[in-house]
Length: 484
Image (cartoon, rainbow, N blue to C red; front, side, top):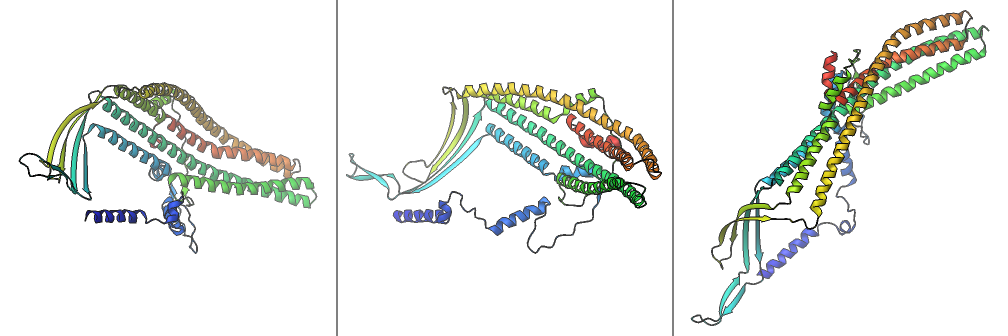
């Protein structure tokens, strides 16, 4: 009977391991278990949530929804809730939280239960010959089937404080992950703001190109009419014709830039990549705080700097834990053992224990780890100093860029009026035959340049002010509130 049981157990193992095909078992890459249709279905499912176009055979393209104009606060809200990079950083923070729980669990009791039921081909016995005992009496030493169950509870006794220091290191790592999450959030929100103002800028630049195109067409018509009447040379006509073609090509380039800016904005805020997103114009001018206030806020809130400080705490706690691991590790607990065998009594036993383990470090690995931990602290110190230097330089540069863009905006507002008057005078001189086409085109180029500065300077200043807010580590929502 026991041998038959062994046969059935062996047959069950063979069936369970032989389900896979021999070819899949032998090939190092296997077959993955997915067919081409299954893989296609997986990608289609991910595409539906990723907001990308996933072409399928005979599929009717969906009708895009009506574009609803988004303001800047709405764009930031969408980025905070639908940006994939922020979601990934939030997942990393959740993982760090679970790692803290794992470390904290080392201070809690661990309970282990084991069980085993064994079939033997026969029982084990021995024959004895003692006085007053029948000769050749058999004593069973092990039954042919035996079941055992064991439960053990072990409580670490952290007399050295090693485990508590390890927990402090894990908690510092969690705080560092919080700083990285905030850095990622600011980075993606600034990317959304940058894409927002980039879209506004290229839209305004397209308007400038349209205005230039109107002037070029009018100039070409005038030059063509005067050429037919013999009042200008062929060269004057060709110059205006080339300028017109260049303006038409510039309009095509502006359309491409608008599409690219819209795709980038959709990608950052989590909308469908090809969604016809429309945005609300922003005409407020950003404020420029004093440099001392900016530096003070940066040293208190910059996530990169805070992350380095948390990393320093983690490294110090890790080094302390390693140093305290030189001491013995104590533990205590209890156990319960039960056996179905009736040979020995009682069948159930309880026990308690206390003990220790002591790694004397004769392999020198621990001392190397301690030395490496102190070197990591030195590396953290250097990185912190380098970050502070780079942070101050970046803040000073960003602040001056904002001021320069606002200065360019103020200058261009006056320069546009003057350039328009200059173009009007040149057009009158050309009509009177006292100027060439080149003179008109130069005046037109000057006007287009000033219009472009006027169209882009404000948006560039707003984008740089958002980058400045990112450097000091404060929420962008506070920046928007201050501009209302």
